[in-house]
Length: 272
Length: 295
Image (cartoon, rainbow over all chains, first blue to last red; front, side, top):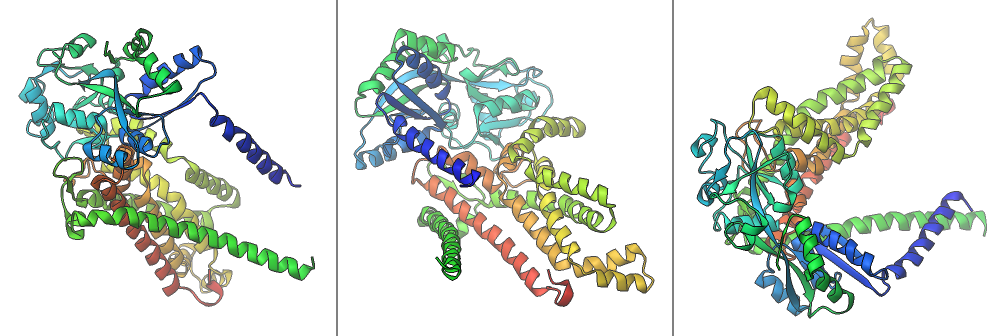
């Protein structure tokens, strides 16, 4: 037998042994929004430390992917940064899945600029005008005489949707807007570009970029929870029907005091 | 088992294996069309291809991919302008001029270039080229057509160079010797004998290089900027088709209009790369050198 054949056979045997193990009891599959991912990951690690027999497997992909997976019954929990659309609920029901929403955290979306930008505050209306392409120069909002480069999330992300809903009131984002595929990519782009403005989930804020206050209100856990800060949205975990077993355990854990501390640590706002 | 029977078994095995790969390809195409065609119940083919507004998540949605098609074509065009001279001339140097030692080194370096993961190139464009472009030319953004074209050219050069080199290599020694015998210099021999004799192979190389550039996803997703508007200058951001599909598919609700529109964009892209391949095939057939120069 050649070496290659041996390797292939060994690999197949490993798969055969590993596959049933992955399907063993005490297994929770979580899939969906990349915004919820850091929270889910930290919570999953903490939960698995408490319950050694439980195996939680996590993946991102986006809210739509998570919901799709819930409909196909290939995941136990679907993370979503938006509410399920009526059409999606209909499709789920047609497949015999009854989606139940659990609000696990609140995300505040923060407009960010390059640290060298003089602008520190914008009103909700100014933000809306900038993203519609009606305000095109920083000097119109009290900055230097520089063109504004509008950076947005890709049009199907939950963050984009919430931004469109909360800031633009459904108006169209200018087609000149640059689109980035993740929160991290936006931070990266803004930190390298003093012309640019972008928006991210509060959990992704770091020192390489400058957060703006909106209408004079800074984005913090407190202002988001009291709804003083206008650009905040709840984050959901969807399950098929009322959760049972370890899925129930995990969601209960996340909503417990300890779980909500994790939410806070990851930069989101706890719901309780 | 006799030798003869073995022969038959092996023959059939290979036949089945090739059949499987064709079958898989066929199923992918069927799937692509099944998921993409439903969008044309909502918009006409004309509106879809020539529509200038891409707002798939709004209500009512606008599914016009013209800005995306323009984005794809423009980065492909500019990257070809860079990659074709680089690729073809380096192939000429490697196959005709370079001494054997340099030849081996150059060949392996170009092959190494082909092995660079596109995400690495994209990252390089994002953190090195983009800020440099922005500072040097004082631009609002470094994520633009120029940046994407340069990186796509880097990806297309190995394809163009190695296929051109094969074509040049296939030009028979007789041709060169005849040329030298008539008193032609090395340059005259290369320019008037070798390149014309290898032209069909070189054209194929160029077109396959372009096909690679138009289908490339990661690089354009990372450095083209992603603005779904028709560009006004070469320093504007664009959103080529593959970037749009990759960025949006993850969150498009299953079997929604947006989902079908993305698959339909894939169909358009499929036809474009198919056209490139057919042209390459046509040129290779039509201008085929018969006799001793056959590839």
